[in-house]
Length: 262
Image 1 (tube, rainbow, N blue to C red):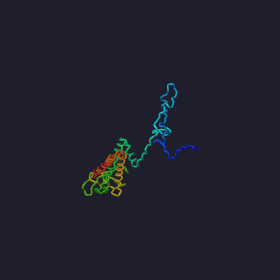
Image 2: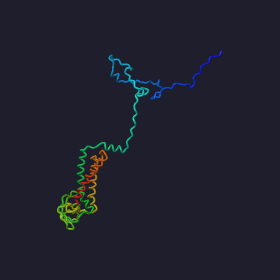
Image 3: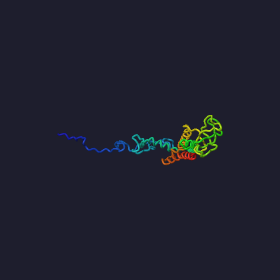
Image 4: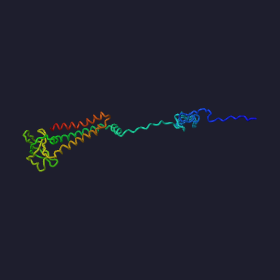
Protein backbone atom coordinates (compact mmCIF):
# COMPACT_ATOMS: atom_id res chain seq x y z
CA UNK A 1 0.00 0.00 0.00
CA UNK A 2 1.57 3.26 -0.99
CA UNK A 3 2.41 5.73 1.78
CA UNK A 4 0.49 8.96 1.86
CA UNK A 5 2.26 11.93 0.30
CA UNK A 6 3.81 14.33 2.75
CA UNK A 7 3.36 18.05 2.21
CA UNK A 8 6.53 19.80 1.14
CA UNK A 9 7.84 22.41 3.60
CA UNK A 10 7.65 25.94 2.43
CA UNK A 11 10.84 27.04 0.70
CA UNK A 12 12.61 30.39 0.78
CA UNK A 13 10.65 31.51 -2.20
CA UNK A 14 7.34 31.14 -0.42
CA UNK A 15 5.29 34.30 -0.08
CA UNK A 16 5.58 36.02 3.29
CA UNK A 17 3.61 38.93 4.62
CA UNK A 18 5.65 42.17 4.66
CA UNK A 19 6.83 43.27 8.08
CA UNK A 20 5.71 46.75 9.04
CA UNK A 21 8.64 48.81 10.35
CA UNK A 22 8.48 51.76 12.76
CA UNK A 23 9.62 54.82 10.73
CA UNK A 24 11.30 56.50 13.71
CA UNK A 25 13.29 53.65 15.30
CA UNK A 26 13.48 51.22 12.36
CA UNK A 27 12.25 48.33 14.52
CA UNK A 28 9.19 46.16 13.83
CA UNK A 29 5.96 47.68 14.95
CA UNK A 30 5.13 44.79 17.26
CA UNK A 31 8.55 44.95 18.97
CA UNK A 32 8.33 48.61 20.07
CA UNK A 33 5.46 49.87 22.25
CA UNK A 34 3.53 52.81 20.92
CA UNK A 35 3.68 54.63 24.24
CA UNK A 36 6.50 54.85 26.72
CA UNK A 37 5.79 55.89 30.31
CA UNK A 38 7.65 58.92 31.62
CA UNK A 39 7.48 59.36 35.35
CA UNK A 40 6.50 62.78 36.63
CA UNK A 41 7.91 62.87 40.14
CA UNK A 42 6.46 66.30 40.83
CA UNK A 43 2.95 64.96 40.35
CA UNK A 44 3.42 62.56 43.26
CA UNK A 45 4.04 65.54 45.51
CA UNK A 46 1.33 67.71 44.01
CA UNK A 47 -1.52 65.18 44.11
CA UNK A 48 -1.17 63.01 47.25
CA UNK A 49 -4.01 60.82 48.33
CA UNK A 50 -6.24 61.77 51.20
CA UNK A 51 -5.22 58.70 53.19
CA UNK A 52 -1.52 59.59 52.86
CA UNK A 53 -0.60 56.59 50.69
CA UNK A 54 1.51 57.06 47.58
CA UNK A 55 -0.52 56.66 44.37
CA UNK A 56 0.44 53.82 42.06
CA UNK A 57 2.74 54.54 39.14
CA UNK A 58 0.13 53.82 36.48
CA UNK A 59 -2.11 56.57 37.85
CA UNK A 60 0.50 59.31 37.60
CA UNK A 61 2.55 58.07 34.64
CA UNK A 62 2.47 60.24 31.56
CA UNK A 63 2.59 58.28 28.32
CA UNK A 64 4.47 60.34 25.74
CA UNK A 65 4.30 59.52 22.01
CA UNK A 66 7.06 57.27 20.73
CA UNK A 67 8.24 60.03 18.40
CA UNK A 68 9.06 62.29 21.37
CA UNK A 69 11.08 59.84 23.51
CA UNK A 70 14.00 57.44 23.14
CA UNK A 71 13.74 53.67 23.62
CA UNK A 72 14.39 54.07 27.37
CA UNK A 73 11.74 56.75 27.88
CA UNK A 74 13.99 59.84 27.98
CA UNK A 75 12.61 62.81 26.04
CA UNK A 76 14.10 63.65 22.69
CA UNK A 77 15.80 67.05 22.67
CA UNK A 78 16.22 69.01 19.50
CA UNK A 79 19.80 69.42 18.40
CA UNK A 80 20.93 73.01 18.54
CA UNK A 81 22.77 74.10 15.43
CA UNK A 82 26.34 75.13 16.27
CA UNK A 83 26.79 78.86 16.12
CA UNK A 84 29.57 80.13 13.97
CA UNK A 85 32.12 82.24 15.70
CA UNK A 86 32.19 85.80 14.46
CA UNK A 87 35.45 87.01 12.90
CA UNK A 88 37.92 88.80 15.12
CA UNK A 89 37.39 92.11 13.31
CA UNK A 90 33.61 91.91 13.84
CA UNK A 91 34.12 91.09 17.52
CA UNK A 92 36.41 94.08 17.98
CA UNK A 93 33.93 96.39 16.27
CA UNK A 94 31.10 95.01 18.38
CA UNK A 95 33.11 95.53 21.57
CA UNK A 96 33.92 99.10 20.56
CA UNK A 97 30.35 99.98 19.69
CA UNK A 98 28.58 98.07 22.46
CA UNK A 99 29.86 99.99 25.48
CA UNK A 100 29.43 103.75 25.21
CA UNK A 101 31.22 105.83 27.85
CA UNK A 102 29.50 107.93 30.48
CA UNK A 103 28.90 111.46 29.06
CA UNK A 104 30.12 113.29 32.20
CA UNK A 105 33.75 112.04 32.10
CA UNK A 106 33.81 112.56 28.34
CA UNK A 107 32.59 116.15 28.69
CA UNK A 108 35.15 116.84 31.42
CA UNK A 109 37.96 115.43 29.28
CA UNK A 110 36.77 117.49 26.31
CA UNK A 111 36.89 120.78 28.25
CA UNK A 112 40.24 120.13 29.94
CA UNK A 113 42.02 118.86 26.84
CA UNK A 114 40.64 121.75 24.77
CA UNK A 115 42.07 124.24 27.26
CA UNK A 116 45.45 122.51 27.23
CA UNK A 117 45.44 122.44 23.42
CA UNK A 118 44.58 126.15 23.33
CA UNK A 119 47.52 126.97 25.62
CA UNK A 120 50.07 125.08 23.54
CA UNK A 121 48.66 126.51 20.32
CA UNK A 122 48.98 130.02 21.74
CA UNK A 123 52.62 129.66 22.82
CA UNK A 124 53.57 127.94 19.54
CA UNK A 125 51.92 130.28 17.04
CA UNK A 126 54.58 133.04 17.11
CA UNK A 127 57.63 130.73 17.01
CA UNK A 128 56.04 128.82 14.14
CA UNK A 129 55.81 131.93 11.94
CA UNK A 130 59.39 132.84 12.84
CA UNK A 131 60.56 129.35 11.84
CA UNK A 132 58.89 129.54 8.42
CA UNK A 133 60.38 132.99 7.71
CA UNK A 134 57.46 135.31 8.50
CA UNK A 135 59.33 137.77 10.79
CA UNK A 136 60.75 141.29 11.01
CA UNK A 137 64.40 141.66 11.99
CA UNK A 138 65.42 144.35 14.42
CA UNK A 139 67.03 145.19 17.76
CA UNK A 140 65.58 144.97 21.22
CA UNK A 141 66.87 146.98 24.17
CA UNK A 142 66.30 145.41 27.58
CA UNK A 143 64.39 147.67 29.95
CA UNK A 144 64.20 145.42 33.04
CA UNK A 145 64.26 141.72 34.00
CA UNK A 146 62.82 139.81 36.93
CA UNK A 147 63.60 136.34 38.25
CA UNK A 148 66.32 134.07 37.02
CA UNK A 149 66.84 130.90 35.03
CA UNK A 150 63.64 129.43 33.67
CA UNK A 151 61.55 131.95 35.60
CA UNK A 152 63.34 134.97 34.14
CA UNK A 153 61.03 137.55 32.55
CA UNK A 154 62.41 140.49 30.55
CA UNK A 155 60.78 143.40 28.79
CA UNK A 156 62.18 146.05 26.49
CA UNK A 157 61.79 148.13 23.36
CA UNK A 158 62.00 146.61 19.87
CA UNK A 159 63.01 148.65 16.85
CA UNK A 160 62.65 147.20 13.35
CA UNK A 161 65.68 147.46 11.08
CA UNK A 162 63.63 149.03 8.29
CA UNK A 163 62.21 151.58 10.73
CA UNK A 164 58.58 150.66 10.01
CA UNK A 165 57.52 150.26 13.62
CA UNK A 166 58.69 150.64 17.21
CA UNK A 167 57.21 148.39 19.92
CA UNK A 168 57.40 149.34 23.62
CA UNK A 169 57.13 146.95 26.57
CA UNK A 170 57.43 143.77 24.52
CA UNK A 171 58.36 140.47 26.15
CA UNK A 172 61.88 139.30 25.33
CA UNK A 173 62.39 135.56 24.80
CA UNK A 174 65.77 133.85 24.63
CA UNK A 175 67.85 136.31 26.64
CA UNK A 176 71.36 134.79 27.03
CA UNK A 177 72.88 134.25 30.45
CA UNK A 178 74.70 137.35 31.66
CA UNK A 179 73.02 139.58 29.09
CA UNK A 180 70.00 140.67 31.12
CA UNK A 181 71.39 143.97 32.31
CA UNK A 182 69.14 146.98 31.62
CA UNK A 183 70.16 148.82 28.45
CA UNK A 184 71.62 145.72 26.74
CA UNK A 185 70.86 145.65 23.00
CA UNK A 186 70.22 142.24 21.41
CA UNK A 187 69.37 141.26 17.84
CA UNK A 188 65.83 139.92 17.77
CA UNK A 189 62.86 139.27 15.53
CA UNK A 190 59.13 139.84 15.77
CA UNK A 191 56.20 138.65 13.67
CA UNK A 192 54.83 142.18 13.46
CA UNK A 193 53.94 145.30 15.47
CA UNK A 194 51.11 143.42 17.18
CA UNK A 195 53.22 140.36 18.06
CA UNK A 196 53.95 141.31 21.64
CA UNK A 197 57.09 139.11 21.91
CA UNK A 198 60.60 139.70 20.60
CA UNK A 199 62.65 136.53 20.10
CA UNK A 200 66.36 136.99 20.70
CA UNK A 201 67.31 133.39 19.92
CA UNK A 202 67.78 133.18 16.14
CA UNK A 203 69.73 129.89 15.95
CA UNK A 204 68.56 126.37 15.05
CA UNK A 205 67.10 125.99 18.55
CA UNK A 206 64.20 128.22 17.59
CA UNK A 207 62.38 125.18 16.21
CA UNK A 208 62.16 123.75 19.71
CA UNK A 209 59.80 126.57 20.64
CA UNK A 210 56.97 125.52 18.30
CA UNK A 211 57.45 121.84 17.48
CA UNK A 212 56.81 120.40 20.99
CA UNK A 213 53.80 122.67 21.37
CA UNK A 214 52.13 121.48 18.18
CA UNK A 215 52.92 117.88 19.11
CA UNK A 216 51.17 118.49 22.42
CA UNK A 217 48.16 119.80 20.49
CA UNK A 218 48.09 116.56 18.49
CA UNK A 219 48.27 114.57 21.72
CA UNK A 220 45.33 116.50 23.14
CA UNK A 221 43.39 115.81 19.95
CA UNK A 222 44.01 112.06 20.27
CA UNK A 223 42.94 112.26 23.92
CA UNK A 224 39.68 113.97 22.97
CA UNK A 225 38.89 111.23 20.44
CA UNK A 226 39.72 108.54 22.99
CA UNK A 227 38.07 109.84 26.15
CA UNK A 228 34.91 111.24 24.57
CA UNK A 229 34.10 107.89 22.94
CA UNK A 230 33.97 109.30 19.41
CA UNK A 231 35.57 106.16 17.97
CA UNK A 232 33.01 103.91 19.70
CA UNK A 233 29.81 105.49 18.44
CA UNK A 234 27.31 102.98 16.97
CA UNK A 235 27.09 103.18 13.21
CA UNK A 236 29.87 103.97 10.79
CA UNK A 237 28.34 107.28 9.69
CA UNK A 238 27.86 108.59 13.25
CA UNK A 239 31.35 107.42 14.19
CA UNK A 240 32.93 109.31 11.28
CA UNK A 241 31.08 112.51 12.10
CA UNK A 242 31.98 112.32 15.79
CA UNK A 243 35.67 111.70 15.08
CA UNK A 244 35.69 114.54 12.54
CA UNK A 245 34.17 116.90 15.12
CA UNK A 246 36.74 115.84 17.74
CA UNK A 247 39.57 116.56 15.29
CA UNK A 248 38.11 119.83 14.10
CA UNK A 249 38.02 121.43 17.57
CA UNK A 250 41.79 121.60 18.29
CA UNK A 251 42.49 122.28 14.61
CA UNK A 252 40.26 125.37 14.59
CA UNK A 253 41.80 126.59 17.86
CA UNK A 254 45.31 126.27 16.41
CA UNK A 255 44.35 128.02 13.18
CA UNK A 256 42.80 130.86 15.17
CA UNK A 257 45.98 131.50 17.16
CA UNK A 258 48.11 131.26 14.02
CA UNK A 259 45.92 133.86 12.32
CA UNK A 260 46.17 136.13 15.38
CA UNK A 261 49.97 135.86 15.45
CA UNK A 262 50.39 136.62 11.72
